[in-house]
Image (cartoon, rainbow over all chains, first blue to last red; front, side):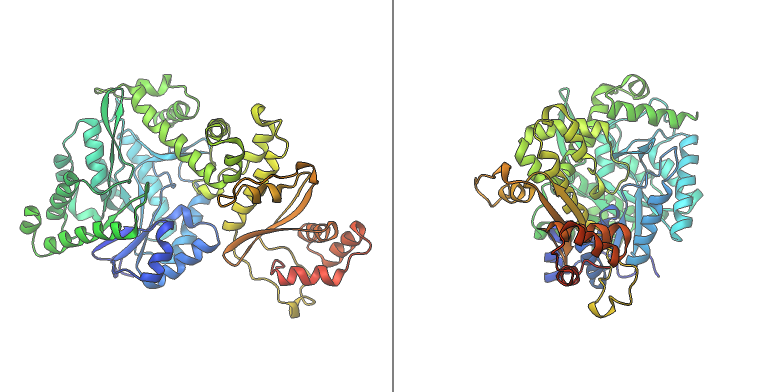
Length: 286
Length: 244
């Protein structure tokens, strides 16, 4: 199966409040993405996903595999993911460059990693194991960060490029996460983006973020609770000029708005994708 | 022990145990203190998991007040963090926790209300299984109950408490001295439902679930109530499509 079968263009993250409406109204959208961990049981939500899959290409986005765990990925969880992938036959399967499990506990967050040779070896082994079991290429997403480690000598983009080169995984470039991390850590988002290997990028994520106060300092929180900001749209245009028209997803997870709002955001992305498809110069001017 | 394993153990302690000493030393401050940066992660872990518990236990939230529930949830998350990333499975131990937790120990019915809500959550996400058709019952020596079924016995009228605390129900009082109840919770189609069972009906299903044998179940039902009508008990499990 072609990894991008029917999935070119823009899509939206499908969340439970919109499932029934999508099934009834069948909006014109390229594809849909769901969080893997919400569909690892039985019942009505899983049956609805199977109906959705008959109408749309679906991408499966995991949040719990913990590819950065020094303990290794959990074999039982990987089996459940493989079962879901077998059943849904998604167009893409993605996970994060982060960790969330320690000593058998699952900390519900995409926690940061120090970018070292040791970490690269750990993440490589975990990605390779996941790809072997799933018998397909995994996309790995850059996380949003609120902290970095004293000893972290490799730049995140370089770390991801090297991970893709060694493991054969693709990259999911979350443009909002680049913006949030760089603002929180004092880096330049454009310089980060320009470092990402265009050949490895197979999907882009867009979302909104919040600006909170931490001890009197502004800190950007990747809450997926508002429209994509102008600065992130500009960064996205720069990304399209560099990567070409890569399948793009709009995510919204808190204060979920009416479906129409997500479709508007996805239409904006689709317009920019069409421009990018006609040539990089147009996209750069967008 | 490799450095990454150590770092993750320290980070985990900073989040779950409020012990930042080891983790903060490795985090770069850069304008914002390491402690403030760790707090961003801790805040998200606790608020997101508390939101999961709130959505699984809405009646308990209503009974104890949302702010108090948040306090109890924080303690629960520290003591019982999730063991799986599938958060629809998170919170199974909350009923036992509430039974032991000092501030709620005196609310004797609270943990059984929580058990009912957990059973409803489990039913919603339980695996699929095809029910036995009436005509193939005799050819099925090994029968059991559908994976969505929980049988719940309480000394309190937890079904009435649950109904009186739904969002669309205003006020109403529940007679806590009304006595106990035996319930079956299950998924019927896309809906999670529960109903009260007779002592014989409860014994029948409970024994069926444990022994997988109709004969043992029938004996248990008659032990519970010698006047029980076995034909009715069997027809009910077939009609409810909970026999698999």
